[in-house]
Length: 373
Image 1 (cartoon, one colour):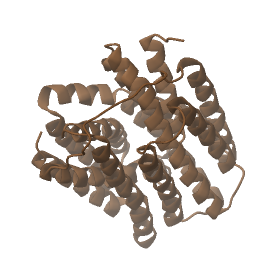
Image 2: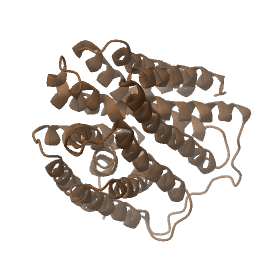
Image 3: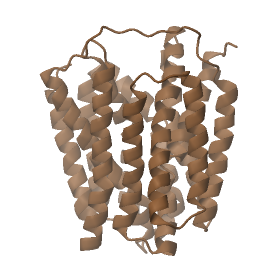
């Protein structure tokens, strides 16, 4: 059955909300409650976060190869796995199980992003509604904001995971209804060979540094707020602001990219994000943490999209470049929480790893400008 482009875009939004916005990022507002109740160290908390990113990296690379079955079947399987992993997190207190569940959830998140995008974006472009892709990508921020509001009303971390699973389930059922099956016989062809220019390697390194630079704040910002008596009252709101800032960001940054150029816009967004990361590291206050949530929330999805758009422009089959970009981004995300967690346990502060993250983003901006258009 044919769906209207608007219905299809909403289906993509809900898929992204479930798989990525909730499945991947709900750990951030739940983390402080788990740390307090289970007496987790920051390094253990960072390991759990990194396990999710290891799974995401594996999923992104696996989804880049030709898999049997339809895109829709893989999408629905990923959404079901995501719901199961969310619910199971509330049923255990065992660290190895936390690591395994978050790794599996990361793989499901990657599959959800890749296969929902494959189903939705090509169809929107084919009908001349490519601009509605911004609605699809707004699902990440929408899922972050919705799950943040949901868990803010709770005090028990077990219940937070169960409620998040229920929210993801509702969104997934809507995807089942709104996103129709693949078109029979649909084939996408590209020139056979992936081209890797010298400039691409600069962009590849920049993308990895971006992954490292944003994820420390994205993982620990709520814990940072909770740990400061002066601003602890902002805890229920800070992650909501982060998500609300993310929701329109892809439309904003890709529009700017069309006017200024993709790589120049990537550099500008990376510098904005660096300012946001550095703000809370240099001086933790209500004003700086709000600035951080808006600047980092409002750039990380835009940078994600801009980097992949830049990688697509190199000619030939873009899948190899996109897979390499996903790997670089994934390694940065894996390293960030572990680095920050262990440094926090050693120094008692997230300021040093946050400043390192800000420096990484500044370097990423400089490298992206060395990559040719």
